Image 1 (cartoon, one colour):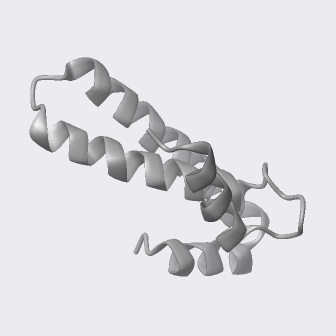
Image 2: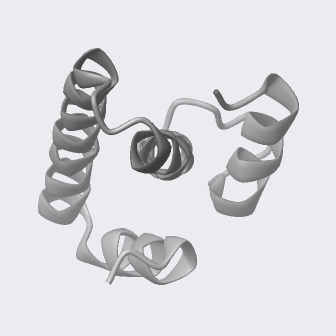
Length: 87
């Protein structure tokens, strides 16, 4: 689980302006951190199917945000992907 302090640090790295917390960049960054942590949990607990379903939902949600950002602003999308290291 990503703590509030971790979320603030993650958002600071990708925020557009000083009070930005809901932009697609911020949401994708937080989702990526949550996905990484949940993936580690699932490596240890292979039979945890409820968490696996949650992971799949988070991945789909992140993909939706990324597709939106790619459609609206290709430059912001490419910058975000480089910062987070998705590709």
